[in-house]
Amino acid sequence: MTGVRLYFRYLGVSFRSQLQYPASFIMMTVGHLVVTAIEFFGLWALFDRFGSLRDWALAEVALFYGMVHVAFAIAEAAARGFDVLHRHVRTGDFDRILLRPRSTVLQVMGLEFQLMRIGRFTQGFVVLIWGISKVGIVWTLPKYLLMVLSILGGCFLFVGLFVLQAVLSFWSVDSLEVVNLTTYGGVETAKVPIAIYKGWFRRFFTWIIPLATINYFPLMAVLDHQDPLNTPLWLSWLSPFFGIAFFTMSLQVWKMGLKYYHSTGS
Image: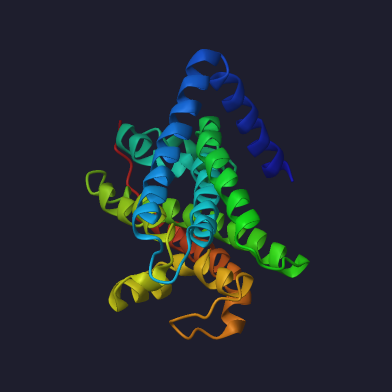
């Protein structure tokens, strides 16, 4: 509990520092909102021209889009410290974190909390609500819970990816852009049904990086949609836990990486 309280103190400090310049905060928040909104308008233009994506309607794809953007916005805000860890490793500041009698994961997560990500969150949430109102299905409490748990699982999955990116910085700070293929690139991948991609691509983002478990499989059960991949229904209801399992695995990799960390000596 002391660790949790410390984390919230980190958040409080971060909030106060970001709100010292309210105009800058508002402009950056609006900027993130506009950028993500333009992405969805591009998707809308695609459907306006061709009518559907395979057998998927715009309202259905809006659910995929909204779920992944909400999950990623929360993860990106809460775990931004892992995304910028390579700077602290390069300067030797990570040594201070190792000397403190608190969890390194907790301290790194508290390095930076980007409140401006509320712009991406808001845009994704609005699209998600619009999609829910337009798909025309019978909503039940289990379906709503499955969506919420899937978004939560998506948060854990993306945080796990940020953790793995941070682990790579113990060996190299110049090749981290490769990981963005699975983080920011993963958002682009998961905002449409993964069934439209090639087989090898689907398998990679199902069994290696389980992006399909944060919206595709759950929405098969929520929408009562015939899955072209013939996925068993029980997988749809268990899929939110894949993100948590991936995050747990990434923490074990983090512990292994710490053993190979060498200080800069600065």
